[in-house]
Length: 87
Image 1 (cartoon, rainbow, N blue to C red):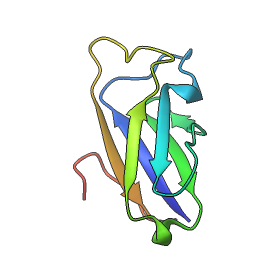
Image 2 (cartoon, rainbow, N blue to C red):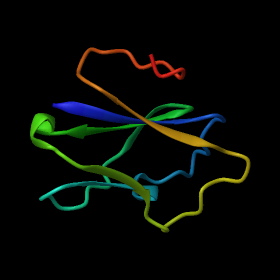
Image 3 (cartoon, rainbow, N blue to C red):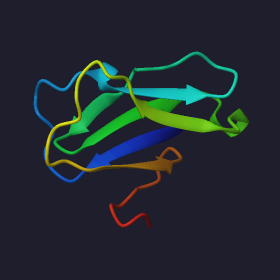
């Protein structure tokens, strides 16, 4: 199982909902099951990640992206640490 990690430069507002982002993997239904793990990170588990050939992370439009914030998407395998510089 892999994990997609969405990083933001500023703390996320507490009213952030999991449905702000969606994850689409080829041949699968959209998943909006992101969970906030700290003030600047959301994660989602990706079952059978090795079979995914195309991955799309997108804003669902349910909530606007907060002003003054930036975002990035990083991928990691279980137990792997992801830093904000991408290493």
